Length: 269
Image 1 (tube, rainbow, N blue to C red):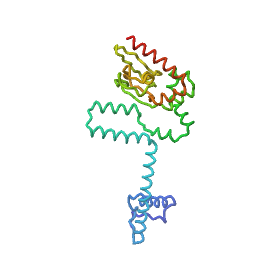
Image 2: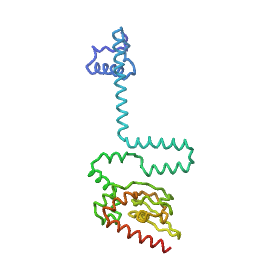
Image 3: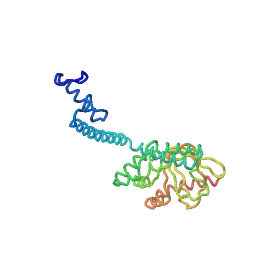
Image 4: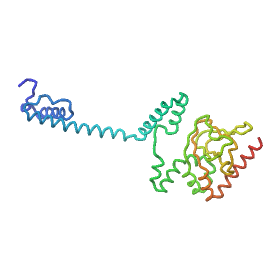
């Protein structure tokens, strides 16, 4: 035999094991057939069988490892897949560069790199768990808003379960004067300007709300509202607004008091 071929019977146990492991790994990882080519048909078929088994195990290992890595941060992967579709959509419609940039910034602020099917997740939970999560997620809004701080906890929970989270960018008109109002808004974070006919600006920030006048009077918007910064708001539809206030008439009076004060100030200008 050639000098390159080892003599296992003369080697120590450690060397014998190392040679055997090297040959087995060469077969199983499909990167060769070991140090020595197979001799005879039995060795050839055993080597091929070993390679097939090894290739199968290797493929399964790669598949499981890939699935494990993807599952570690599935929400980020879901966001990236979604944003790729958005990019292709913008490219297909040949949107201008500044519009694409605003859409990119909107997605970054709205989803912050992670995307969840929140409606589906909350829909699968029991009512007490759903209410607990919503109360926790909106804790800053409740803490900053005097309207909620002094209200019946049941009213607060009823309101919070019907709110929808929305994000607006600087310069966006959240409300336009003269349009039919279908929502009111609660400010979690950000600054907005209320613009009236007299060109007077009134600033509202964290813990304030606006847009309730139209829901109470069932008329058209009496002023425009513009976002001055990135605004994280919660909106409440007119149907949900009336549904909740039917159960809590005292809170309707609280909204009406603020609305009348705001209408008076608009009328003075």
